[in-house]
Each structure stands twice: as structure tokens, then as C-alpha cells.
Image 1 (cartoon, rainbow, N blue to C red):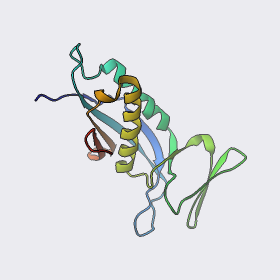
Image 2: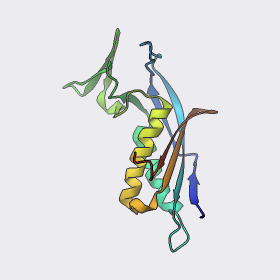
Image 3: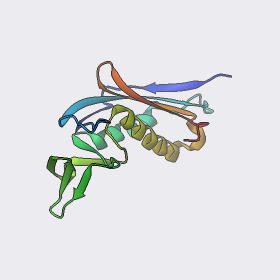
Amino acid sequence: MNNWAITLSKEYFKFSCAHFLIFPDGSKERLHGHNYHVSVEIEGDLSEKGLVIDFIDAKPVIRELCDSLDEHWLLPSEHPELEITELEDNHTSVVYRDCRYLVPSPEVVHLPINNTSVENLATWFSDTLRGRLVEKFGATQVRRLRVAISETSGQSGVCEYRSDDNR
């Protein structure tokens, strides 16, 4: 049986964000940023026209997700010890132990993850992208989706979805 896939890794599949990790011992990194790069592989059956998914159709969906994160502070809304509060003055309060931050709300993105690791970012990106691809192309078109997010050269987190995984 043959398998077909397309791989997309464009220069503009990137986003620059601030974040910090919270480690298992409770310590955390200082607030800092990365210039993340995204690459995607989509496996599926060939259409009657000989395509898995047309590059022209897939690229804007990936770019849109990158743009939604670009130049924001990524907050892991599911971390049990991180207190995130939307204030009435259009600011967001972020408290972790003895560290307190106040930032304009439009400058943050709340992600339904428990930490802003590249592994979790790849999972969020993969799940969100898969949903958008299914909306656009149908559920049967995406058999496998692999998303890699690099925070620096040589360091990536990867999430791979397979339609038979029941994930």
C-alpha cells in the first residue's frame, strides 16, 4: 500500500512570542521569548487530481495559526498554580507564587495547555490545525498530521496525530 504526504515548512510559518516554563520542582524560567518555526506534514489519500491537499489551500491555514500567536505572550490557562485574571480595565493579571505581571489583554493568548513547552505548543497547533483542515477538506482527507515547532535551531517539539489513535 502506498502512503502519500505533503510537507510544508515555509519561512513565514513562524511566530515570535514571550513565555516562561514552570518546572516540576515549582521553579520557573524568567519571562523570555523565542522566534518559533513551524513545519507540518499531512498524510492522506490522493484525490482524483493526484493531490493529498493542494499546497495553495493548506498554506493559508497554517499561516493563520502562526499569525494568531505572533507577538503575544503565551499563557498556559490549564496550569493549576498559575492565576490568570482578566481585569475590567482591559488588562490581564498573571500571578505565579511571588511573581506578578500586569499586561494589556490584547497582548496575551490563553492556550488550553498546562505549560508553554514546545511539546505542548506542537500539540495545540496540531489539534487546532487538524480541526481546521477537517472543516475545510473533510475528515477522511487527513490520515496523519505531524507538527514540529522549533524554538531555536536544533530544538523542536513534535506532535503526531494518526487517525487510528483515537486521540
